[in-house]
Image (cartoon, rainbow, N blue to C red; front, side, top):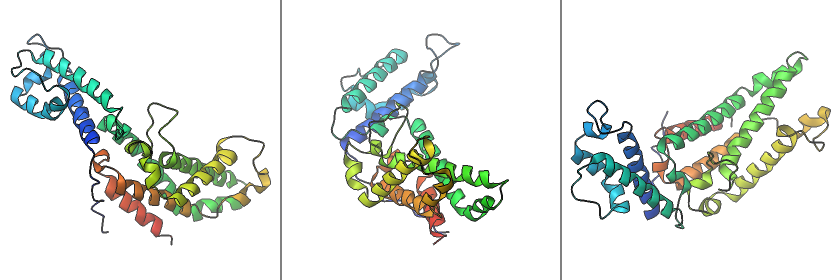
Length: 275
């Protein structure tokens, strides 16, 4: 199978360059300060590395946050503490810039962890679509009909989670949540993404809210609920993948994990197999 090499990288802004440099610098300092300094038994980890190498690795962040730093470092522990505070303060200052990107403020590990869950959820939806003939057949028997109901509800709720990532605004309910809009300056993703696909994802998510996720008296009658459900969820999965393609083409690829392009190409092919 031929795999896309990935989209051309969008030209990065100065703000995101600075955010990534400060984030990398703060992460490195956090690692170097894992152990307290001051004694031969409990040396700071940084003392296990050549001082010149440490300063070289930190230079991009230091050039942003501490241009008047001392030329000679006599106390590495003290220097790293001051550098870390300056990196954080400079990152806070960048949050006021119009080209600030929330996702670039996150650690690589945290951002990739969240995107790995997105991958897992889309893979589950695509797996459900590929097995539709199997689980829909469960509805023909009284004993297995509940399985069809539960699987279908699960696909819809998981779809809503994916759609939420793609179409929600940056004003989120939880501090540990990221959406596609957070990978761009405020308002940029909303201008980039396809309006028709966005409207489709929003509408279907609202139906999931009313018909699956929340017990409401405005739901269809129990015996009629299947009338309002699609015969196949392939179109919904395809809409998610198409918008993820748009997201990938526009985002700064430094904010994506290494596996992203290959996985998205595989997902695109899985959607096409049922056409």
